[in-house]
Amino acid sequence: MLGLDNAGKTTIVKRIMNEDVTTVSPTLGFIIKTIDFMGYKLNIWDVGGQKTLRSYWKNYFEKTDTLVWVVDATDRLRVNDCRHELAGLLLEERLTGASLLVFLNKTDVEHCMDEQEVRERLDLDSIKTHKWTILPCSAMTGTNLNEGLEWVVQDAKDRLFLY
Ligand code: G3D
Image 1: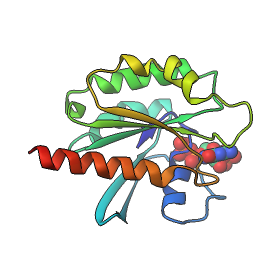
Image 2 (image 1 turned 30 degrees about the vertical axis):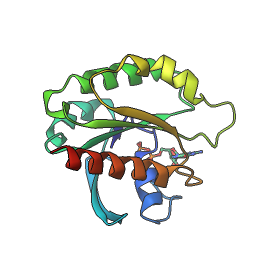
Image 3 (image 1 turned 60 degrees about the vertical axis):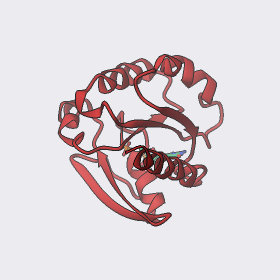
């Protein structure tokens, strides 16, 4: 799970794990959590998103089935930065076979960017190299987090049947 700092990655992981979401501090390194979901074990790597940490992202790509890219729906100022970082990741050789789930987080906040706006501003429709989807969600309310994990599991299942 990657994204710019402050996108809500740690809060999403905490919400999924049913932990208290009112106390999060910036992720300086990474946190690994394993959850049981629909009979599968999902290993979630929450990797810090600050600019200084982004060069380390590539150390986490080995054996990644799905890249969960978390976008802050309230952060219009950094949406270009967000598009640029995502585009760079999709060029990474070790992520070639990975699928992409874009979690549009913080959609509980009024006047935030909606799915259509983010699709356009991140240029998602031009992505042909990876199977992808976008889901508006909220780590605060829990909206759509399970649906996102379901997509991840279903996608992994589909790939198992292919091999
Ligand atoms: P990161 O791990 O991507 O860096 P964090 O992001 O999980 O640390 O979250 C950054 C801030 O966004 C936190 O606020 C957190 O409470 C808030 N946040 C995360 N998800 C949501 C959401 O879905 N809705 C809203 N409204 N806020 C969210 P603070 O104030 O602690 O910086």
